Image (cartoon, rainbow, N blue to C red; front, side, top):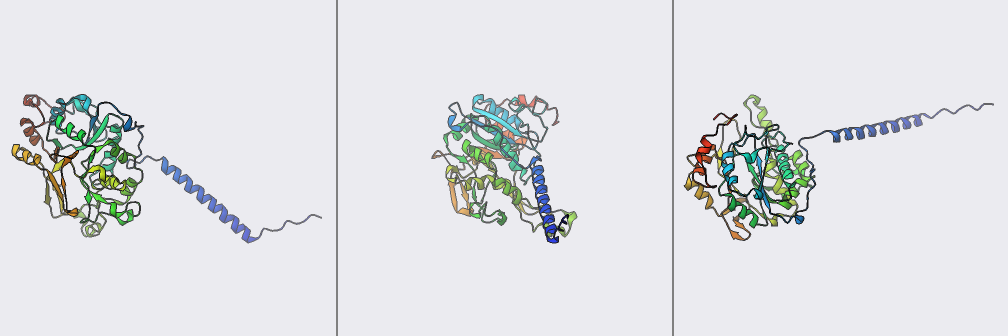
Length: 382
């Protein structure tokens, strides 16, 4: 006699259904994660250049000049004279510009900038994490040349205050990086959501215009943790807009943070490297407090023009030998390898007129004004 099959209890059917649902859910999550990882993200970053150890380099060291430009380099004629009086084996040039912009005879006055733009430039927004990405791309490209032993980050409005020989000797004489870094005690830019990966006691603030030794540039490029936290929790508050009316009140309650004024300083502090720094910038800036009806009060750099870039003003900048940090009650006396030196090698923001004036004064080297006057740019039209 055939034995009848026993019916499956209802609870077994339910349990089997739950197991199937769990397996399906896990599979979908894994698939989504794999797809997410395969998508390119211009705000993310991972180093790709295989680098030689700095200890293996025995040749002539170079300074890498890293220009962070919005598009062109309006002061290229000034830098052309600066580099013209330098040994070409002592420097290299890298430019991060607008994606697709090419530096050639039609867009720059100087052959020193021909094809020096990075091939992987991204669109950069002021006060956004994309600024840090662009900086790291510059350092990464420069680290590809083992001869580059000093790395100077410059804006497109920066001007040198000395000739190449002086700046080279100044930087090479010091085994330290020059990074403006101080405790951020007055601003509320630290986001508690960064804790514990970024502790508040390691939070620092300073100018983004830095000069690094090679080992510190490697730290900036190789970081895979701290930048992800900055990208997530250090964001600029949306600007005030008249069209948003009362919504502005809500927007201004959002946490406000400017990543490029904190990232390098905080990262180096977290790596216990502050004892290897001269905690000051080499780039001089005059700050002026300005405000309009629909803007938050904020510090804005003053632009040097022809009238205020004369010999007296430049000499006053060169005479500065210390910087006072109010939040730390600290006076930073300017030294290079324990020798007293002027604090600043560069200044910003310089107009073309201001650059013309310091050229005429012979600040960066011999200058033939007729060469500039005879130059007719193809795309600027001035």
